[in-house]
Length: 249
Ligand SMILES: Nc1ncnc2c1ncn2[C@@H]1O[C@H](COP(=O)(O)OP(=O)(O)OP(=O)(O)O)[C@@H](O)[C@H]1O
Image 1 (cartoon, rainbow, N blue to C red):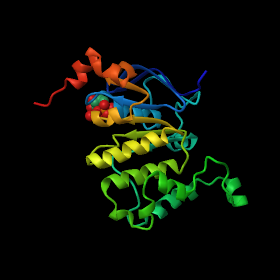
Image 2: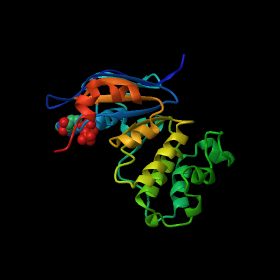
Image 3: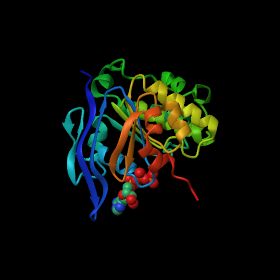
């Protein structure tokens, strides 16, 4: 049986009585790339906030690698292996691309590898390899301030990966990107998905089609509306009604 990286049981999150998440059940296998979609206010951000420990469940529980994360502080959950990428890139603009990656890679070196001066195992990626993965090897010595928005997004994803998280959470990685940049970020996520478990929250349906090889989960009013392959989800009348049929007027 495949191991579950994340299991969420009967999760409810109330803000002053308003249920941002309402009896949500969710589970995902290690190695999956799961895309989560849903109309505005469906509870997507709150969902990530609970997984990272920023918000506590009102009811229900969240198991990460089988362990209940209840009341574990955010920084400890991050150390347990959950990395989160926010919408706006948080890179050090006054450093070069390479130095940005070096900084987080060094922070992550464990005691043994520091003592013995070598990489601890094959999980540890070299900065050179990472630069290639994120497609910024030719820009390694450039100041991060000179990167385009899409390149900054890729650098920040690289910085997360440098910390070898077991589960990578990405919040609307395509927001504000050009078509070409969107495709690059999509290709990067697909290549990372070969060796990582990833949850991506996304609005841009074109982008969802590009990256959703595995399952898509649709949230609506804090609950699970449906789940399945992209083509099933896209043709589900409930989804068309609440989400795809949503037309701005
Ligand atoms: N701290 C809070 N206090 C009160 N209500 C909140 C709080 N955080 C979120 N909400 C409400 O909970 C609901 C779900 O919000 P959430 O941000 O999780 O949705 P979302 O699916 O990420 O939406 P969007 O796509 O617009 O970002 C919204 O109605 C929001 O107003």
